[in-house]
Image 1: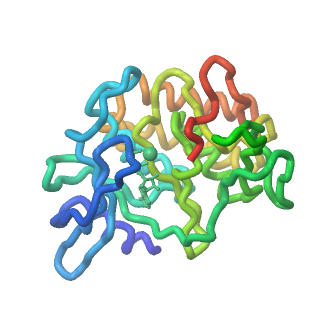
Image 2: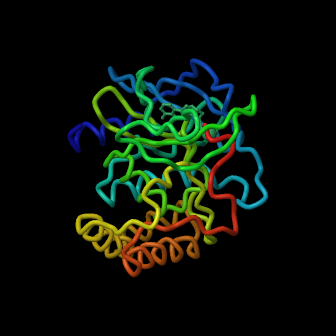
Length: 266
Ligand SMILES: Nc1ncnc2c1ncn2[C@@H]1O[C@H](COP(=O)(O)OP(=O)(O)O)[C@@H](O)[C@H]1O
Ligand SMILES: [Mg+2]
C-alpha cells in the first residue's frame, strides 16, 4: 500500500461512520467487527470501545486503546509494518481504537502445535507441553523473517500477549499482529509464543533499524504523539528497551520472573 492509500485508510477509520456488523465472541474485551464508511470508501475493521475494556490489575483502566495505537506508531517508525492501520476513533459505544481488518486464509498457519518433537522443516521449537487430553505436544512457529520482525517488535513494545491467534498472515504475504492493548508496561512483561530466536544475535539490519528508531523516539513531534498514548515513564522505558537491545546485540531469553508464554497460547 502506498503512503497515500495508507493515510486515506487511517482517515476513514478515524473519521468515517462506524457500523457494527458483529462481535468477536472469543475476545476478552468488548471487541466488534465493523465497517468504517467515508464518502465512497468502506474499510472493514475492528472496533474496541474504551468503555468495553476489561479492568486489569496491572494496566490502568481506559488506557488499552492508546496502547494499541502506540503499537501501530512504533511499527511504522521502525519501518516494520507489522500492525494493521490503527487509530483512535469514535463509534456507537463511544471513543475507542479502530483497526483495519486483516483477512487470514484458512491454511496460513505460522504458529502451530504438533505431536511432541515432530518439528516440521523450516519451523522452530518453542516448548513442550501436554494438550487438553494429556498428549505430549510441541509449540512451534515458522522460521520466517516476517515473524522474526514481529518478535523483535514485541520486545520493543514489551508485548504481554503475543498469542498464536494474535499473529495474522494475510494472502499477500504480509504477517501482521493484533491485540496490542497490553503493551508498553514499564516493567518487563514480554509474553509471547515467538521465542524461536531467543538469545540469537541481532542482524546488522536489525541493529540499524533499532538505531534509527532510537533517534526518532526522542524527536519532539514523535515524543509528543506517543505521550498522548502512553505515559512519560512508559516512553522512557520504551527508549530503554531499544537501548538494551542495541547494547546486548541479541534477542532476549525468557526473563523467568513472569510467565513467558501466554496461556492459552492461541
Ligand atoms: N485487525 C484484525 N484483523 C483480523 N483479525 C483480527 C483483528 N483484530 C482482532 N482479530 C481477531 O479477533 C480476535 C479477538 O480480537 P483481540 O484483539 O484479540 O481482542 P481482545 O482484546 O478482546 O482479546 C483475535 O484473536 C483475532 O483472531
Ligand atoms: Mg486477544
